[in-house]
Length: 162
Length: 175
Image (cartoon, chains in turn blue, brown):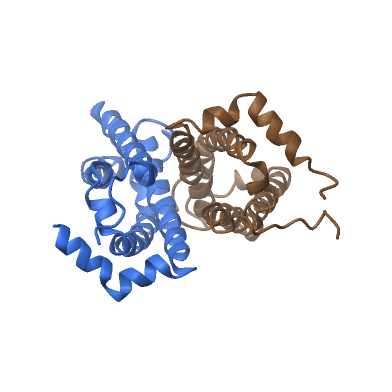
């Protein structure tokens, strides 16, 4: 992979994101705002499914999905740009892989909660005991993913390949 | 010369209390940053999403139920305040004269004033708004200000490292 990383690093886009005085910060800001909306909505649904705010009808939390999609879109676009700017830094770091496993897992958990439990809530049924564990697992995955992301600048062993 | 803030005294405080040493140990800074970010996430998932609810997102969820989660936002705020204090005491000059930091504090003050207005004028009336309806204008305005402040706080937080010294904002210093 090393030659691929080195090649990406030398593309004009990669050089621009790294070296432009402002653009890197603009990308970082959009990444933070996107993650705030995505994880904010995700944690909210996790907390509700874990058994808090019980009187709030679970299926109505679907209304927060568009907010999470906007957040995901911002986070992915900015994340890809960050990846283009320092490909080797991220892709040689196991913490980066851990972050992705956690965040994709968290997203899938939210989808699973929506599939399993939203229809039950819509029919006015009580949620099964297992719902609580889905909620807790979702919370743990979001928290682990965000924490891993925060450790990336401190755990990389390669900055640039070229 | 700064007539109000005594930076050397704050630096001495940081060193004497051991904050400076702690924060310069290998993992303390990233751990504190992670706690700071988790705090922000808790704020967003409760206060931020509550604001969005008032703005019409997630209609059908009773506002009073969603408000129960605001305690997580308060916990998140405390996590941010404690870790933020540690950051500032480690390098007071880098934060207190930083345009992004000052703007961030102004936004937090605005969010606080906005919250006081919310509980004084709007929270009670909101309880009788049906869950399926869009809340009245004043509630939406307050929610808009709150959400704007917190998203601004996140933005300014990211910008703190952009405005490292030699950036030096001190409108209270005189010439």
